[in-house]
Amino acid sequence: MNDIGARRYLSAPVATPEDIHRVQESLLSGWVAPSGPELSAFETQIALYVGVSEAVGLSSGTATLHLALKYLGVGPGDQVLVPTLTFGATAFAVTYLGAEPVFVDVDDAWNMDPDQTRLALEALNGDGIRVGAALPVDLYGSPANYGALMPLFSEFGVPVFEDAAEGLGGDFGGRKLGGFGVGGALSFNGNKILTTSGGGMLLTNDSEFASRVRFWATQSREDFPWYEHEEIGYNYRLSNILAALGRSQLERIDRTVARRRELRELYREGLAQLEGILVQEDPRWGRSNAWLSVVTFDLGLYPDAPTRVRLSLEERNIESRPIWKPMHNQPVFRGARTFLNGKADSVYSSGLCLPSGPRITDFDVEEVCSVISKTLGP
Ligand SMILES: *Cc1c(COP(=O)(O)O)cnc(C)c1O
Image (cartoon, rainbow, N blue to C red; front, side, top):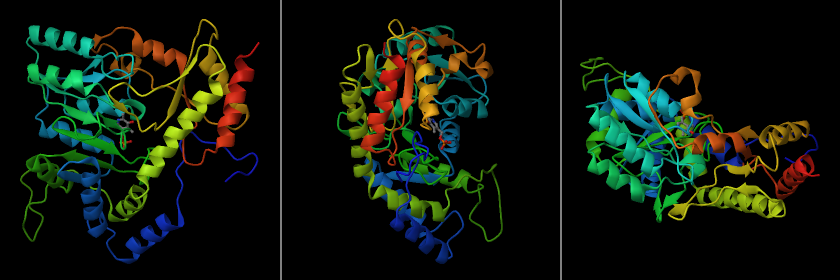
């Protein structure tokens, strides 16, 4: 794991002997289709962990967002509120239903800004546009300000679906992320905090929501001996083998989150001496899972710092990554309606995601901090 020259990735997973054993057992059990005892148990255990009554294992976070918006009745002519600082999938899913994303800027904690959200809801309402849903995101594992956002959405009668793809293990006011609004989406993609290589999950307390999504995700197969379809279906279920991998990782989720948070504190300590460099902190309303440690640079003191640091780290075979490029600047969403305050642009231009996965050692953190210091130093 520590061989000299080995690449230090942003968030590479580890497979423990137990993970491998569990996948092997699942393979040998014959339950290789996207149903089976591992999948059911994984759903039950995640629901218990997050504190919701229903969970449906799906093939990806994106598929989860797609079917959730379908259940909420989002369709052509509707607009859906999406924070502009997010991964593209949040907004892509909106377009699958023929609806349009409206991009709302972020607050100081980098999530959907309540003030801009109110402006957006008032403006869209005034224009007689139906807001089909709102998709707050828990960026880099940090909770959105649900205390301010939820009353706002209920005031305007807008259903909320939480994109908690990055948020498993974080909390808002002690309540685990993923269960806010009418439901939430998790992602188990490659470098997420719990990964089944690919996968996702719907979380909700609405049993009708869960059963409709489970049905659509299983090719809308009616209860007949033959394949009978009254509705269009999707092949969106999570495989039983991957669920076995997920269950194994879920058993150590608390340790995983603790280590990610520890890495973030090590970066904070390692960079404390340098003026104008900040590591993302928890918001006052909750705790991040610290999926990724993200640093921002004072561009007045260090012009072009994110690019310079990223290239210096790359020379040492250390991966780092720019912040998600805001959706309102993405060519594919040119012309979308926006409610901006400049914060997403400023976070994007000044920030950098540092290596944060379970393979990163304390020594790696020291090295990253020293590369940053040397790159930006006098
Ligand atoms: C990863 C991610 C998704 C998509 O999840 P997949 O499982 O990769 O489809 C959606 N939203 C956010 C914020 C993400 O980070």
